[in-house]
Image (cartoon, rainbow, N blue to C red; front, side):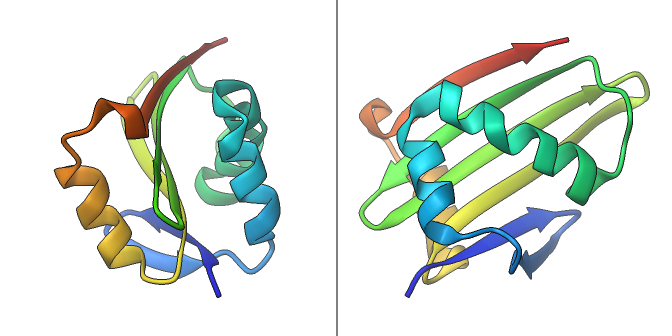
Length: 111
C-alpha cells in the first residue's frame, strides 16, 4: 500500500493527514490539481504566511507519484517534496535519475 510522505529539511515524515488516493488524483490532474497541495505545504509543512512564487515539478512513475515544490520567499527559498509511494527513497532516486521528460510536468504559481 502506498503512503504519503513529505521530504523537507533532509527529513522524511509520513503525512497521515493526507489520503494517498486523493493526492494521486490531484497529481493526476496536473498543474491544476497540484495547486490544491500548495495550501497544505504553506500551512502545514512550512507554517509561513507570505511567499513570492512557487514552482512545482510533477513526476509520475509506475505506482509512484511525486511533487517537488520550490517556494520562493523574501529570505530565500524552501524545497518540499510530497511523495505517494511504497518506498520513498526509491521514488526519489527514480525522480532524480529519470531521463524521460514524459514523466515530468513543470508548473509555476505566482502571487
